[in-house]
Every structure is written in structure tokens, then in C-alpha cells.
Length: 369
Image (cartoon, rainbow, N blue to C red; front, top):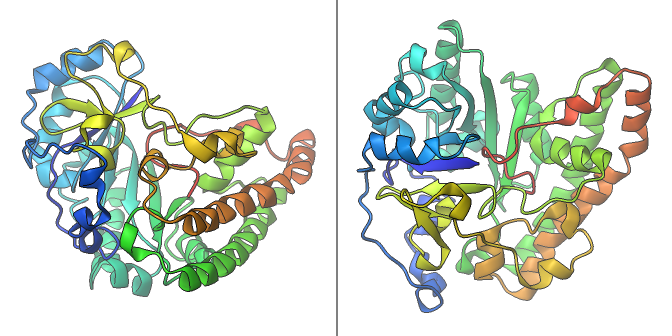
């Protein structure tokens, strides 16, 4: 299984869609629906030997450094890498990416870097100078010999629906070939405006259609850009496989909190109802969590998987808002289904391979935005 380990709750960024919203968390009213436990420390106090013993029980364990900002705990990262033999991944804002010695960085095979597109978009969301700092840090680690996969992890906010332009920029100007995006929608009760979000959905869906055309245009040359929402869905369609929740939360991926409790998802790390166990629990005995409600009756559930456990369980947006979110997912899946005959034809001609659409599940990209 994949385990996100929260090394610290502290972050060195104040992003608009994270910090500015999370400070109003209890205006959501979730404290009336769930039981919260805020006794965990801000910085992980888990003994490395305890973490090692737990992970040894799982022959397929993958550890993902997570925060807050994990690179605020560089010595902890070094200690874990020195003492534990598992594959490592990381999700970071990239501001301290050059501070981890390259011999350690090289042991982290895949790194998700928070980057929302061009300089204007990224700096608007994440603070002035962020874009240039991240790009400079990426340049430094590549010069030092880092060859692992770097994934631009975009947040698409309601103010900026044009995922096509920003993804195209990251591919052509910032030299990313691996990109994932997540919609900032449905995670906070107070940010739904029906008129505004309806307009966003209309523009976003148009942008997705353009991006799919751009993606498909590369394929006759044998090139499949790793746009995770696209490759994940196409891979399932080619293999005719059904999927559970695509991020893995609560069934194939869990979170190790700063005090050693294990929960279903990072955003649920303080909610008692989503505790799955602790470091003394066998990985095979961790409590499993499932999507519930209307998602189980949806005709595209076998491809969508339910989008997000937190979104599904909290229902923070009204029915109309959730229907609009689902409209984006249905458009994404419907549009990609239309491309299957072309893709299969290219595979039959040996221009592409089925493996071009395969990817490592559950290490970070949620697939369904």
C-alpha cells in the first residue's frame, strides 16, 4: 500500500485555496457532524524504528513524504531514508527542493510539485516570486543529476477555468511532461456561488475538450504526455477494468499522522471517524472506508470511483453544487471515451503501446479532478 506520512503540519506558504480557506474550517459545521482530535503535535514525533517495523509488515509499502511542507523536516527525511528500505515519493511546494542533498533526493523517485501554470497564475495563488523560485530549484536539482519523475500538481481555482492554456504552458515553456490538476471545488462550505461556478463549469469543460485534442495530436508521433486524469481513465477503458476510489484513500492508501495514528486521507487527519488504526496495527487489518450515497448509484462510478472520500462524506456543497462538479467529471469521461477508437488504432499499428497509459496508482495524483 501507499502511505502518506505527515512530517509536519507547518507550511511555508499561504496559498489562497488552502491556508486562507482552512482558517475558516469550522464555519463548515463539521464539528457537529464528526468528532475531531487535535492532540497530535505539529511536527512528527514518531520514532523511526516504529515506522520501520510497521512498514516491514507490508511487502508492497511505498512511503510518500507529505505535510504541511515536508521539506521543513529535512533531517527527518534523511533519517527515514537512511534507515528504511522502501520506495519513496514526495509532495512539496518546491520552495526548498534544492535544500535536500542530492544523494537523498535521488532516492525519491517521483515528486509532485505544486505549480498552477505560468508565473502570473502561480504567483497569484501562492505568493509573489514562487514560480521563479520553483523553476530555479528544478533546474538546480536536474543539474545535480536528478532524473526522477517531476509532476506539476496544479490547483484549478474557480477564478481561472482555462486548464488548457496552463497545462500547455507547463508542457511547452516549463518542460513538464507529467501533470495533474485538482479542482478547488466542494471542499469548503462557504465558497459555492451557483452563478459563478456554473460559468466556471462551462468554460472548464470547453478547456478540457481543447486539452484532449492537444493531447491526442501528439500520439501519431508515438508521444503520450502523462496528463494523469487522461492516462488514468484511458488505461481503465483499454483494460476494461472497474475502479475503486482512484486516489486510494481508505482502501489502498492511508496516512500516517504526526503521532502515529493512521487515517484514510490527509484532509481527514484530525477526524476520529476516519481513523483506520495506528503503527501497531497490521497493514492487513487497517479499517477500510468506502464511498457512500448517490455515488454508488452513478452510471460512471466504475470509472470515477467517487471522486473524493472527503467530498463524498462531508457533503459541504448543496446538491446543485455537487451536480455541477459531477458534470465536469462526466464531460471528462465522455470526451475521453470518444478517443478510444483512435487510440486502439494507434496501438494496433504499434505507434503506441498499452503500457504508454499505465501509471503508478495511489502515490498522489487523484486522477479524477
